[in-house]
Length: 199
Ligand code: SAH
Image (tube, rainbow, N blue to C red; front, side, top):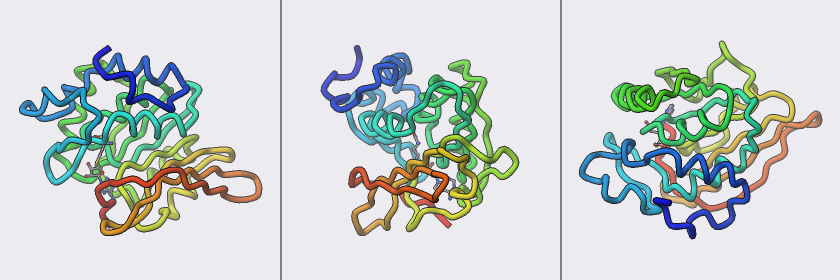
């Protein structure tokens, strides 16, 4: 095991831990930081963006409750690390990134790892991906000031969305949103720090 076991405290889904251990995190971080790839730290990936710490990636993934059959929309491809986990835990991943260079790099990395169930879109995540909607699950890895309404519209019934909400100079709250027959249920889980979801 490359990560310390402690960082998965609170992760009950053993499959998630197995998958995390099967993905080399060092290929998602800049060369000079490879030595830090197995720390439980967020790391810079260029363009003022960061790859989240593995414990948080695991926690957000657990909140999605994946069974292997879902179509998942991810906003903020970044390094592609979260994408890789999703690709191994579900059927199809639709991932949107706004910075072209990051998208290209993530695509290369994920192709090299043989992940062929990932579909990439360069664009603004606030619009979602109408063509493939609705999605069973949505995960947002940059923080919008409030839950983007178009994303809510692109969820199936009983669908789940995980999204960090809040500005840069305040606490952001990691929210779990579940769409029910009677509307949306919102649950606040943790305080977190994400880069902004740009408008
Ligand atoms: N999940 C990523 C972390 C990404 S950091 C990983 O595992 O590495 C957040 C990413 O969201 C950045 O790459 C940033 O460019 C992207 N982003 C920010 N605003 C966005 C928007 N409106 N639409 C799509 N992507 C956005």
